[in-house]
Amino acid sequence: MSSVKEKIGYALGDAAAGGITWKIMSIAFPLFFTNVFGLSFADAAALMLVARLFDVVTDPMMGSIADRTSSRWGTYRPWIIFGAIPFGLIFALLFFTPDFGPVGKRVYAYVLYLLMMAVYTMVNVPYGSLLGVMTEDSSEKNEFSSYRMVGAYAMGFVTLLSFPYLQKVVGGSDAHQYAVLGACFGGLAALMTLACGLLTKERLKPVRAEHFSMRQFADLFSNRPWVFLTLIAICTNFFNGFRYAVAGYMIDYCLDGEITVGSLIINYTVLMAFGEVTCMIFGGISPAFTKRIGSKRMAFVWSSVICLVTSVAAFFIPMSPSCIWLLVASVVITSIGVGFYSPLLWSMYADVADYATEKNGTSATGLIFSSGTMAQKLGGAISGSLIALLLGLAGASMVPDEFGNSVIDPSSVTDSVKTMVWALFTLFPAAIALIMAILAYFFPIKK
Image (tube, rainbow, N blue to C red; front, side, top):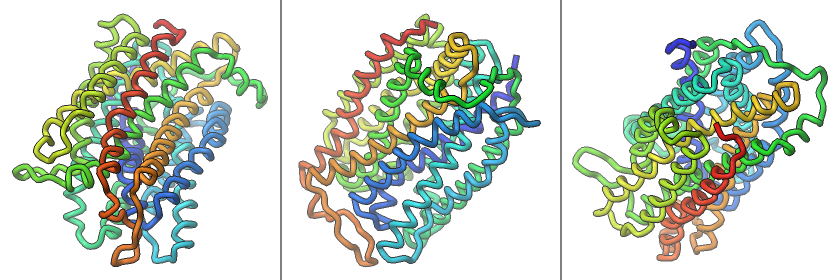
């Protein structure tokens, strides 16, 4: 049995990747790139889409490389340990707004964003794969996965809740605030990632293939559980991607900006922080929920149904600041479903990796877990790109502000734009949740 200390160490890895870097990138980037950095909607959409196409190549490549790594630190841990500093540094640079012209800014954004995606892959693919070699017990894998999700959501809650207050503490222009916070959160993410690598252990030795072969990639597509789970993973990240990426626009344009309730400032990060703490709690009890339901597959189905019903209901909440607590309640209840299914996803990837080893005779753990990371980034980026494009189609347009940055023209925020924003937060995710439930129901592994 693994110690609680090791499980907490493993949780620190996703506290850094999921709770800090990915959470800020998912929720703050659409607004940062358009309203602070100065990219147009089209540029921001293209940037995130190009980066994800880049990931389609780099993620499986990294998984294959990690599977063949052999060192004194193990197979996957060296990538986490030695990737920690570049991971935090590039994240910090990504939030810096250089004093360049439009072309220079565009080049800077593309280069840094692609670098961030590359180093995220270099660290997070081995991190996910680590679950497959720490223990061979399926229940313990589920516990590790639960700790992971609790760590990610707990740190996500702290990050999102503190962000607006830290902005006020830092002061100055929006660009200055993001640059300072990017450096602080980047440093914290680097330290957590390093601690994860040092506190975990690899107990199982992967059965490595002798030589690199494209056959391993072909084997993935003949692996029915992998196909189903990859589609499910893409859907989960579409579901979260739409909600997180549009939350800022929803607060700004549907509810007329941040809302002050007593001493509490409710902006887009605080709104989603309510969801983070809910996910943390229900992610922690996900193993008990799964045991009660009887299988990971059916637990995932019921979790998706929760997300479906609550997302549809949220569409009918009036667009009014006076209804903010109804909106908070819908975020909380929806997050119960997200909290239940999040640990299941990675535990199911470990089951798929075991299935592939039994079927093919060699381990492809890194390659299989890389598809989970790729799905995460693909779902987040495409949803972000679609949001930018759909808002443009609904009538939103960009104009330069007093500093020359591109911002949304307030006069272009019509009722159709507001309805599109509201639907992107509710009905679009609901449709995705329905697809998730159907795919999970037919998932071939019945554990």
